[in-house]
Image (cartoon, rainbow, N blue to C red; front, side, top):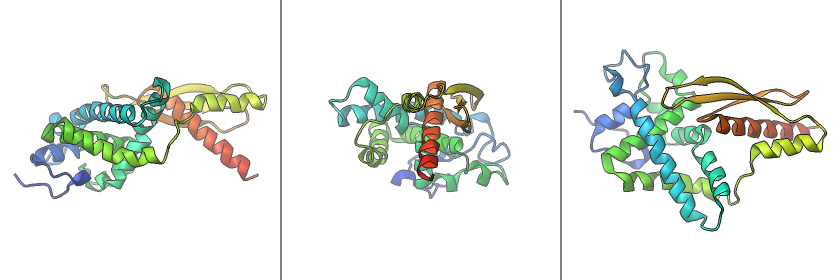
Length: 230
């Protein structure tokens, strides 16, 4: 078996087939490396999602011993969100190595949901290849700089948006589920939030609650930027 020369996160796989599987998009049906459904990243992404979630939870528990559960949950939701994992995937070069059908790789590599799946799949592959301790250390190493950039627990975006509207006498924001996408074991919810006389903003998340928080955060950012530019 030919070894894969790519070493994500600086980790060299003992079983290169695991890395190949982790990088193979489900739509790569005609790729030689994807002869059947078990050879794409979906099962590894399912596993990696749990590995990343538990590793981040443990890191936060140790890093912030005096914070209550609610604050830890807010930090956790951000760190395991699709935008954050997608950015990490790009930083680690995963987007450049996605295996897909001819003509589709570039488009797929630009999709945050695909990039986040790649990140989780590769972490899942590391877990199978080397065990919990190695996978946990890799996740912690990648997440610590993000924690250092956010010393205080993030504010609940939905609550902040509600307060913004109340302070201006505007009716509360309305959230609407637009669609559910992705694999059945890991659905992606697309939610839209709207305020009267303001543009509707859409965002996605691994749960409806997370999607609503992301949409609220994006709308808050737009409101702050539009106010500052006036």
